[in-house]
Image 1 (cartoon, rainbow, N blue to C red):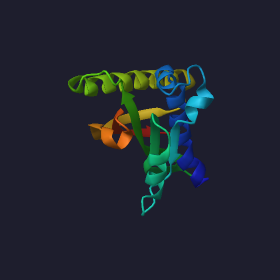
Image 2 (cartoon, rainbow, N blue to C red; image 1 turned 180 degrees about the horizontal axis):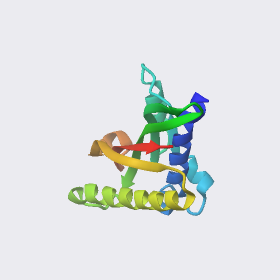
Image 3 (cartoon, rainbow, N blue to C red; image 1 turned 90 degrees about the vertical axis):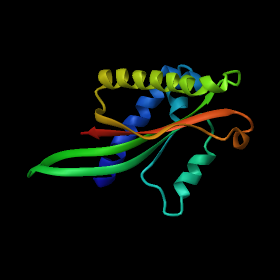
Image 4 (cartoon, rainbow, N blue to C red; image 1 turned 120 degrees about the horizontal axis):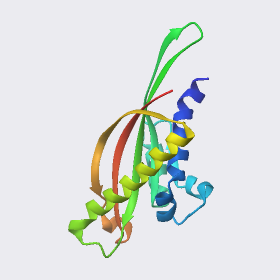
Length: 164
């Protein structure tokens, strides 16, 4: 039961990310939710030795990584209670090579905003995830192009506080 409670919110966030038309476009999987789903990786925790993080770093780019950051259950009746989870959503997306250095951050944020808007719309129609609060854990950051064969990747980390 606990694993289901921990895994459920991650599954929902993974699915909502894969439903984004913009995410499908940038991962080369337009109109294919199942293929886009393969670019969204989830981890229940980071190993003490960084094992899960290392696995994430070998997944193909662009990608989104999901982590369970916190979990809380408050018993309210003899048969149930309220659950809250903190989920970390970390997109790693490429900015077009011709984008000027000064425009890279805004271009990255525009794509992230579109993905988040589409995820929000999908969550309203599917009624799957009740996001209470969103916090930025890591601001938009440029990855080292030397480590990415000259490609311009950016990332950030958001924490979604969800209930249900």
